[in-house]
Amino acid sequence: MSCRDDAIEREIFIAAPPETVFKFLIDPELMSRWIGSLHRLDPRPGGAFQVQVSPGNVVHGAFTEVVPFRRVAFTWGWESDDPALAQLRPGASLVEIVLEPRAAGTLVRLRHGRLPDDLLEIHRERWSVYLDKLAAFLRSGA
Image (cartoon, rainbow, N blue to C red; front, side, top):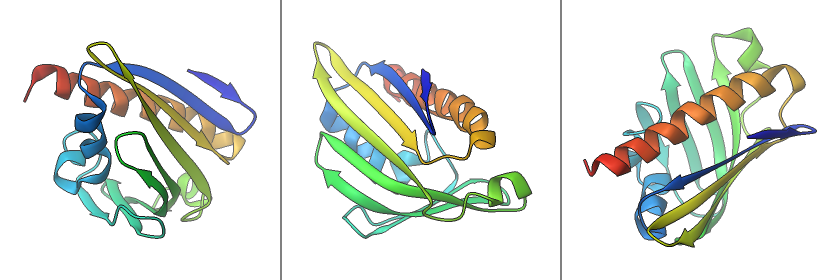
């Protein structure tokens, strides 16, 4: 994972085809297996993206791009009891996820841009945790 300007980037190999990984990016029930507890997702450009990541911390945004099995992008910002997170207003940043087919799986490339400097580290750490959870869940075949 690296940091470029106001963005974080993360790549991870997931031992599942892009069609499977894609479902975990747009389906509320499947998304709850790797990030958040409550979800309101309308996976189409302009559709709602809302995830309660933890009690008192809700991400609000909108899908900007949904290309089946290849790419998902959405805006991201916080409604939060934490003043540091709350400075990133709903929809202020952009998350882009690209799925690249590979032998025996998918290379997932995540880029989260337009982040304030003081929120880069927490988002870098959390995306690592959540993507690792997604990979582990799919590896387990659960």
